[in-house]
Length: 108
Image (cartoon, rainbow, N blue to C red; front, side):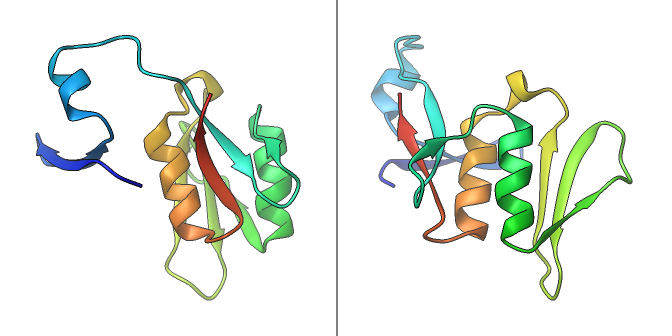
């Protein structure tokens, strides 16, 4: 991962191309989450849930607005928007960080 970490409105995020973002460029490539061992692009929450469950993650049903997974024996919690269309690169990077060498984010 390369880029610049930006702190804005109480949120830290990685900006991979700060020059393009400052210009408001809409030509930025779409990101996809890829399961590295199978080279499979995660195209739905059903695919993602299957992969996470096989890695020992458990589904939480407490919040009706979120899809949440917890890994037993850790403090890790993955919280995702219910709507897969709102699944953004920040959610993808969260999954990558909590599952090293299992997933990666790629440009489409």
